Length: 290
Image (tube, rainbow, N blue to C red):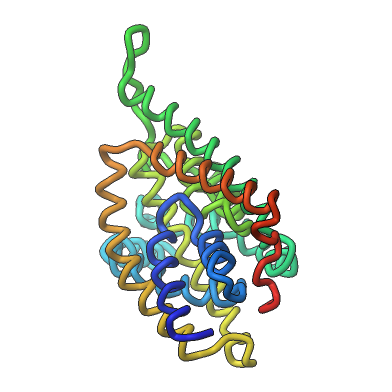
């Protein structure tokens, strides 16, 4: 991998990690369209450490409060009813599905799941799901002629059951094209949570999963499967760009609809099917890296 490739891929990772359009799919597609080798699941996992570092800094006050309350709840029974302490447990519970499936499906994630036809399918299907979830949320928030405005749930309403459902949605993002934020936000909206609550829990839930995945994949870098220099460079770029995207996205979702992302996903999926269907692009383009 060249330094130019690492710069572009780091930029793509930072731009797409927190948007509901799938960073892993865009890394895969960028390499395929440019004629580069697929950067692979290990490169993706390691560069995600950069974007998750941006999450740690952006939500540092929330995270510090949750971690402190959680540790106190281990010895202080009175703290176990504290919302922040409960959030700590709920993040742990929500991380179980992706941890189990990530290990179980490791070979598929690094191989068959990176087929461009599957990515095109998940882009379209999950785009439609996000669109439906967004419309339902808008109906509750706006109401209508024959509908009263319906109050949606906040993170204070989060239960163990909902935390597990969020976690299952996040685990779906092991397939490129699904999108970690897109799947968890869609699940949250369908369960009746506000856009802001669904997005905030989505970002918090991603922290242990992404950091654990990145740490696990570091062994590939040590064994020579990933170039250290370009990968670290891409991770730094992803961090800087990702932080700016988080700040923008959290403001965007408070007043705007997810429909622009829905339309983008569907159009990109259709374009990808056309390119693969006309043999302009191989469904396995660039897979020699793996």
